[in-house]
Length: 262
Image 1 (cartoon, rainbow, N blue to C red):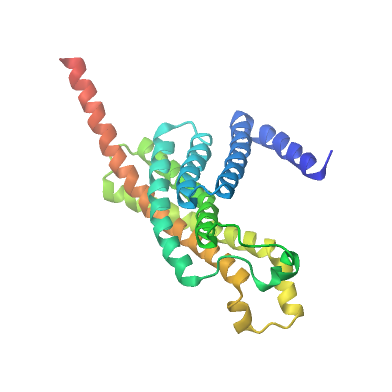
Image 2 (tube, rainbow, N blue to C red):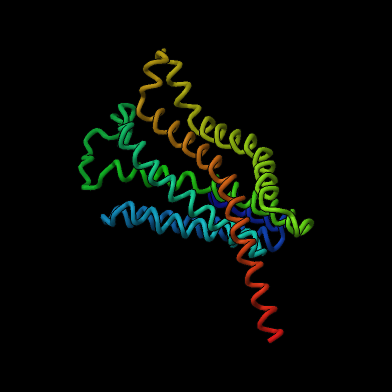
């Protein structure tokens, strides 16, 4: 048994013990998301348009993550709709930023590993960078959307007659509580993953200007900053979607009562 397999089994057991059926669903969604990410990589390798792969894979991952993580349809549908809107906005934003930053491809630090290999694979590295950046933001977006949507669902259950402006204000208040922890999670996740690179920069006495213009460093910082922006957009967007869906649910309820009475 390999170390990864052992850790995977420990993770599965702990998720089931702590979360029960919901924990098993979360673990299964993790496996499915990994499978779809691998499938997306294979499609891009076979020259399927990366933007098409990004959209299809992104929608699939959001659906799996959200709908397998919660049973309440009001919460999940609201979170899914808001996540789709934010993902669409971010894709447009990411295309512009990646085209302007020009940090796609490999850095000089990869030259030793690439020696003797051809990088002319017939795929646009810019489009691959857009795909990577977009898919990297989905976890943070889905998490924020679910947190806001769950909180607003509780508010509606306790105060069903609350006005929409106050509902949006409640969503913003919930968002302020999760923004700090979400930002720290994203930041330390990236920092921990690239700690060896940072130590290497320090050991070779890179200047601050050289580090800030390093392709690998800039690409990672763009990912984390875009994730931050995605979370910030998700907070008001989820609150707004909840108010719209609330109105639709009320209209459907009124129509149902009218049909029953007639």
